[in-house]
Length: 153
Image 1 (cartoon, rainbow, N blue to C red):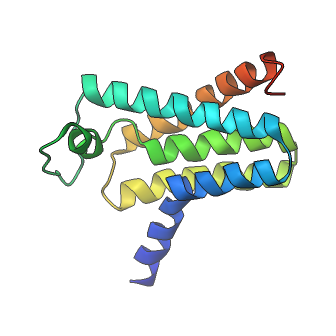
Image 2 (cartoon, rainbow, N blue to C red; image 1 turned 90 degrees about the horizontal axis):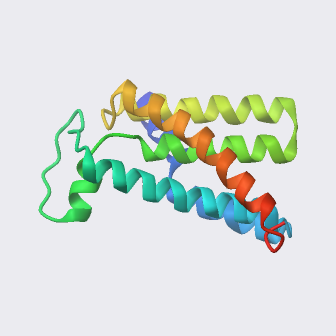
């Protein structure tokens, strides 16, 4: 019971509320480059996830019923948006902070998010691997965009 609760908590590391907290912290630290990179990454990841789930619907391990478009997007499993957000933040923070122990922790935590999503039967392994890789790529794109727009840096 305690172990299952722990894995549920690990999965929350890829959740939207934590992402909002990180955005708020970057603003509080006056790090506009980090803020805009993370915000751009969040927007890109949202658009890509919705687009993929609209065009390629894949049932979750435990099927969910849906009646609306947003319900269908939520009921689809590919890619894992939790894992994508976790690896996106891990990549952005790693490249910005450049602290090896923290970087290792962040990427292990992002992998833990993926593991928790599979363990809780919300995703298949392929979903979290794709989400992890997509998060890294989106982070690099968002960092590039934020770096090349003078207002954001």
